[in-house]
Length: 150
Image (cartoon, rainbow, N blue to C red; front, side):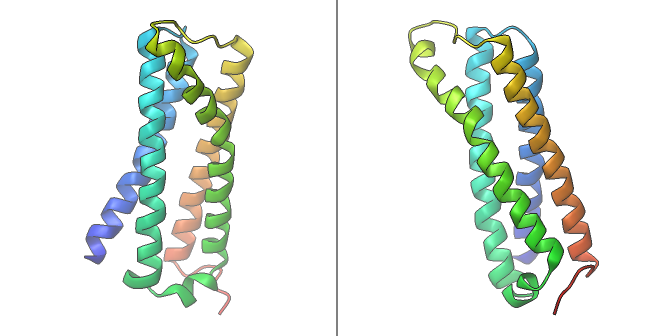
């Protein structure tokens, strides 16, 4: 069971990285009805993957790995959780934008998004991807026992 949860946890993390990359590339092109719908689907998958990471990660910490006490005394784990929270918070703005597109998409109207808004969302996605890469570094440090404070 431990291996299965670890596998699902890592696949969900990879999914987030891929989905964010797909969103960023799609936003680089002119927005059409089809691309706007794709972005909404990508963002829903992103949210589901993040929830899966949170649930599976919590189960791994509490029941399937070294135990919560170990992780609460690991500086890289704490840093990883802080980075996860930051990514979650900064992802709210693009998600709200994509949700607001729903009404116009149902009417067959291309969402109104300026080049400046697209650049801002792409910048947010760049930051998210960078922070996610730092989370991988934290995970490697955790696995090697670096930064254990106990």
